[in-house]
Length: 210
Image (tube, rainbow, N blue to C red):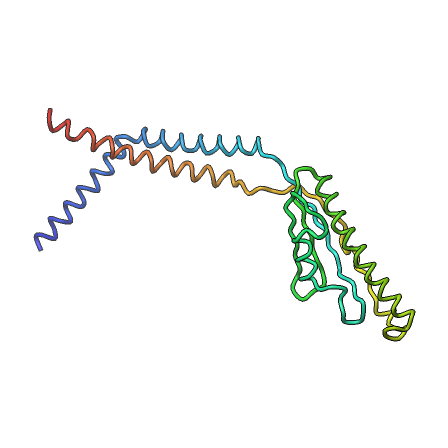
């Protein structure tokens, strides 16, 4: 029982010593904290100021049908062709999305200049529309010649179309300045506490010598 009391008292003394040491060098800790905040804020401001702006353009296409329940081509096929560069090789980031269980395609382009983003988007969508129109015209010729299906199949044909015109917006970067400053401040705080104990450890042997 007495041993437990002694151990608890030693722990209390150690904790008081730590608190006393931190309070003794509180200005060092505060200085490190302030330095961390200033550095984090300065770097965030610098990178924000010198950031190269990027723009995003996107367009929505609805894949047409050559018959009542038959698409001109599946969304998966079209996405693969775009990604393989069938409609052009571009140095820009091209993203293609297909909402589940739909014949809709969203094409996104990221570029430094908004007019370049729109130009690439229009080029890709224009080639897709032209290709799909050509396929439909071939189907119509077959129908007229009576090679396939009755003439009333014309009513089942749907052209691929743009369902949402190109939209261009500046791409927002997720810098989170407040979070960066908080992280910088906490890093400075921990560094300050570390320095306090390091200095105390460094000076302790010298005090014993003298």
